[in-house]
Length: 48
Image 1 (cartoon, helix red, strand yellow):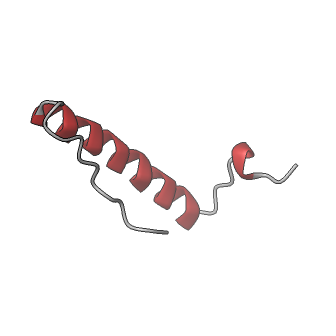
Image 2 (cartoon, one colour):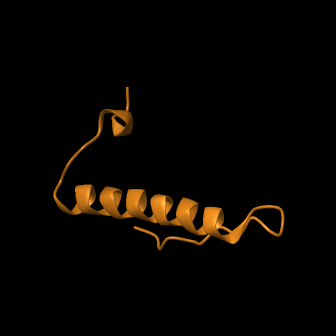
């Protein structure tokens, strides 16, 4: 799977919010990677 890309919001958003948002997105990315390595298939991934 691809590497996580940090998202910058610019000067309009405080750095602590940007950091927390990216931490949550990275955690979700990590969990998806773990699911793939363990062979877990999500219903959203099924081609119906």
